[in-house]
Image 1 (tube, rainbow, N blue to C red):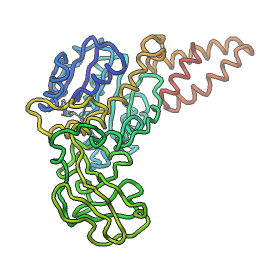
Image 2 (cartoon, protein in one colour):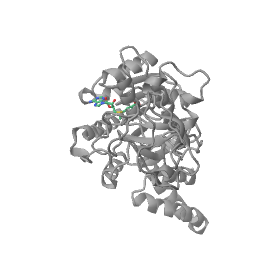
Image 3 (cartoon, rainbow, N blue to C red):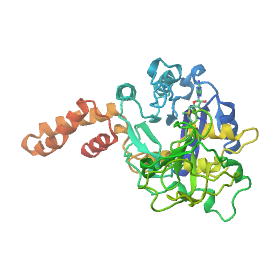
Image 4 (tube, rainbow, N blue to C red):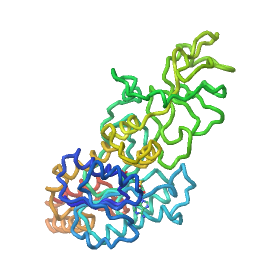
Length: 398
Ligand SMILES: C[S@@+](CC[C@H](N)C(=O)[O-])C[C@H]1O[C@@H](n2cnc3c(N)ncnc32)[C@H](O)[C@@H]1O
């Protein structure tokens, strides 16, 4: 399969194709971040790197089988300012549309953040399909809700593997990595422990309540990795490793909870309410973030790439197992081997029209076929472009 990957980042798309068992004949990437490219090159020296999408004439890739990409999302993001298509970064979405128009691939896959319905609809209109929302939390220990627009048929939600952060942290390992201590957050008296939020996974925060300062539980999903977030723990999150006393959740705490100490401070239950026993708070390591994106350990450990760059690239990246799940549709009967005639919506429309005509011409004998096809035609006319409808049309017009 020949693959054109726009906004390729650290090439999670290639890892996903390999994981889905899809043979790659050629993989051409467009990416401008030098650290992301370094990481990609370390793992995939065979990828052809072509730089800036805005400078590309994509018609040279006509005949490629699939165009994939996750265009920069800050403009759309609920975390960002929702600047929409006027934002220069969101405008890059139109480069994806241009690529699909020029390459005319059989398949495409676009990923983006959850956004206002109004923007989502514009993207759906351009691409002719509705997105499917998948939370990476179904296949990994990270909560990460993303939208996927694709014409790969048969895309459904992956099964929930029930993985929590505690399952992927270094504390589980017999041989803990050297230097884990440097990720431990030094004691800070400003720590506020919350009551209600403890149940939802948020335990408290240092100084003021912002993403960079929040402390979460390892017993739930990790919060979404965020490549564009600022300092502190904003990109990777910080978590409490320790034991909450059983009565903690119900009780209102006040004042200072932690004993002042060194990095490996111990949190005692001496205080009447008893909060924590033998705990510490630490940021996730780059390797743990790789696990949250279901990448191999040390995937982003490349020469000349700092921890800060690794966090950024991972926060911008894809959850490989989600992408591999979607791409599996290329391998099954719903994909590559499926009838060429119904690979795109235009062909689906033609197929449904033709079948309706044939069944109508049969008179009463064709009534059953007309009954099945008419509601599908109504859904199509209303603008629905879901994998579900596509598959139903394929089945009904066989
Ligand atoms: C949301 S990230 C996509 C990451 C990718 N899916 C991955 O698996 O790592 C968007 C990427 O677009 C890249 N980008 C931004 N402007 C670009 C441009 N003009 N040409 C090519 N890539 C660009 C950014 O550097 C960033 O890596």
